Image 1 (tube, rainbow, N blue to C red):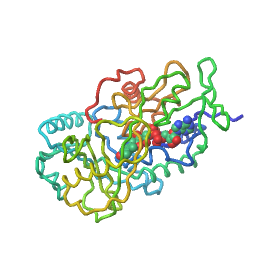
Image 2 (cartoon, helix red, strand yellow):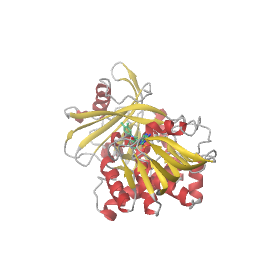
Image 3 (cartoon, rainbow, N blue to C red):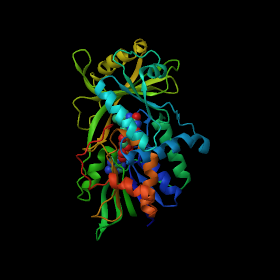
Length: 388
Ligand SMILES: Cc1cc2nc3c(=O)[nH]c(=O)nc-3n(C[C@H](O)[C@H](O)[C@H](O)COP(=O)(O)OP(=O)(O)OC[C@H]3O[C@@H](n4cnc5c(N)ncnc54)[C@H](O)[C@@H]3O)c2cc1C
């Protein structure tokens, strides 16, 4: 029987770029997914935002590497993954947020990130037609951007197959085989495979995989909705993030929302509901569209006549502190977590994939050890990140 060096559970935002990195490093790689093709889990629900401007160094460093990979992909391999470096703009609409964003930008600059707090005039240049009532300014990070989650994952998938990765679709992992607390194989509804390492990249189902090893993972899925409009002439490039929560009769109850105009001219948008909606329900609601469109048209009145083409709902695999859980566990040798990506799995994927591959080849740098320390399974989960 063939023995794989690594078996990755899940062909999504994390599993596919990880297979790209492991296959490129010469590791015999198998990826297994229940669904019928690549990126059909929550990757395809992501709206494509990619930023390195986080507030903790683990996510900053991983996403800086992801941005290098996304931004150079077309030149290196020829596939257009719709990478656009339009930046991110977090708006300050209250004094409290102004202060918070100024402080965070200062801290982010300390990590070498290209980000500044800019005044409302600069924001008006970046977002022509924005309503400047209460607009105090905001942060702008020009090196962040966006890409198509489906085009990017398909490009990574093709390249990983060229490098030797194998994919088994329509196949569900049902068990993990160990001997003397060491991974030796994986069981599916169709077969058994010998493997030295297993990476749990099962997204919203990551907890079930942990349970197979009696490892309790604090990953709970939450429903989030998104939508897309018809195309119009391009008039802005940045991702706009409004962090001011809404809680009144006119705008309803919701936390932040964010949107950008993609390279076809369509506006793609997403909202964080208040309260959170735990569970695995992926059916769209009638609440989402009226809530977000009222907020978007109030902020950018020129959107009032644009038509919405489609909405969808997907899952964020959440952890209590909003940070992923990455790395080995002490109880079972050969098992690696790459779970709890929250709302940022697409942007983390390429950088994280390379790190996971270095765990297996034992080529971790001192930066990698710092990242793994911050994202360890054994950390204190109740310390909150500012820009979750
Ligand atoms: C509305 C919305 C907007 C978002 N916007 C962004 C964004 O702008 N930027 C960003 O970075 N992120 C965004 N996200 C978050 C992003 O989609 C997730 O963080 C990411 O997809 C999680 O990646 P993953 O690889 O862990 O899971 P997935 O991409 O869901 O992949 C997991 C795979 O594992 C498979 N699987 C599970 N269990 C098994 C099993 N037992 N056997 C075999 N296969 C199994 C599943 O079928 C699935 O294909 C958004 C999410 C939503 C819902």
